[in-house]
Length: 133
Image (tube, rainbow, N blue to C red; front, side):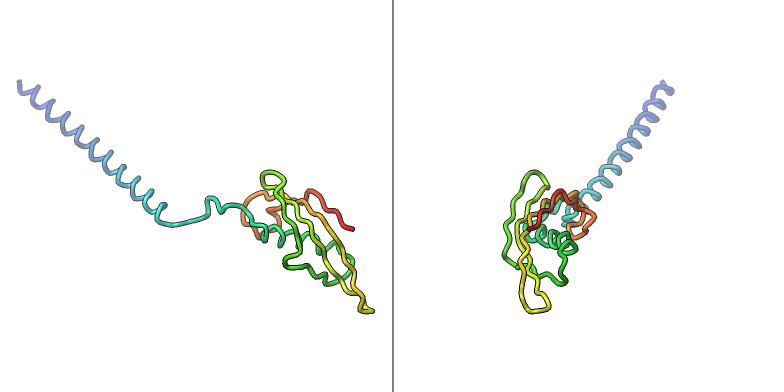
């Protein structure tokens, strides 16, 4: 009978250890989840680029292709379209002035693909097509 009581106490002691370990792991998990939830981070998904973000990046791709220096892009003179997931089409124009004071207008259509990551980083974009006239 003594062996049976001693075995029962040892099993109860071992089971109690397991319960404490599981409870401790549960508390650690809850603390990690709570800290993540309260961080308020938008790093997981920021909603993708806005039309203004895409236009700003389009200007960075178009500027080097215009022969004249200092092209001026219009702040609101563009059209924006989402072609498919993360592919954007911008139609706009840039004006340049020559030495004699005359101005020239260059129309362009650019198709950009956003590859993810920080929106303002040019390496996170791929130029799919650029037409100028």
